[in-house]
Amino acid sequence: MTKKTGFYLLFFTVLLLGFYYFSFRGTDNWKVKMPVLSYVQPFQFTNQDGQAFTDKNLLNKITVVEYFFTTCKGICPKLNTNMKQVYEIYKNEPDFQIISHTCNPGTDSVSVLKHYSDSLKVNTQKWIFLTGRKDSLYQMARGSYLLDDPKNNVEKIEDQFIHTQFFALVDKQGKVRGKIYDGLKVLEVEQLKQDIAKLLKE
Image 1 (cartoon, rainbow, N blue to C red):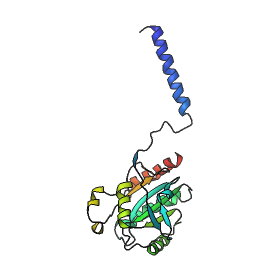
Image 2 (image 1 turned 180 degrees about the vertical axis):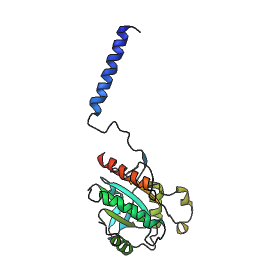
Image 3 (image 1 turned 135 degrees about the vertical axis):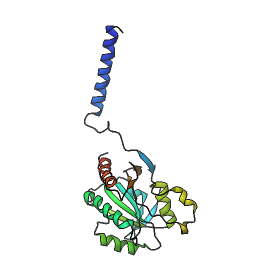
């Protein structure tokens, strides 16, 4: 390679590096974005105050999603203890919310969810509790949030019961991002907290 060719290669390399530096300087564009796992499908459920809550309520918010039931004595109390840690960190963030779907709508009526939410002493504008048709709730858990195996859908809905320990994270455009987080594992809950902060900055 001649000196002239080497000079041109060096020149264009420096030029390219300079372009990328000035394009991304002062931004987070150079960082790897959290992967998109799925997209939230349209839905309509009812919250603890008897009001409609739809997929439109997710837009422009970072949302953490879970499934639980109020009479659960097993994993649910631990899950919601960990979820409350997340809530306490971000409860004053205007672009953040949590939605907890019941997986037992036959028992968890609007009034039952209201009593449960009151017992947690949380702001139900920030942490919303939802009930609705069982088949619709389960379809969302499997098809949108990836919190249960879609293959379970082949069974009769009355014989099904979702009992999942996982959380999903949804961005402001209604896309499920990052990973599916194990709500019983300290390290994964910590990662969830950090990933919420990342999405809030996007």
